[in-house]
Length: 50
Image (tube, rainbow, N blue to C red):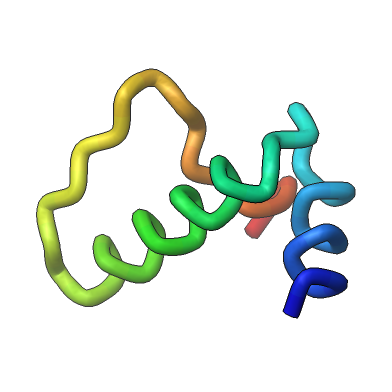
């Protein structure tokens, strides 16, 4: 699982920390489930064009 997480981090524009990438993944998932999740100022992109 850490390898997959690190792969996502490597593909991100800003190389977020592992905890930040987990927040982004969770935010995206919850939004996809219809939850109104707000984020501070962080972009919630996992990868370019994703």
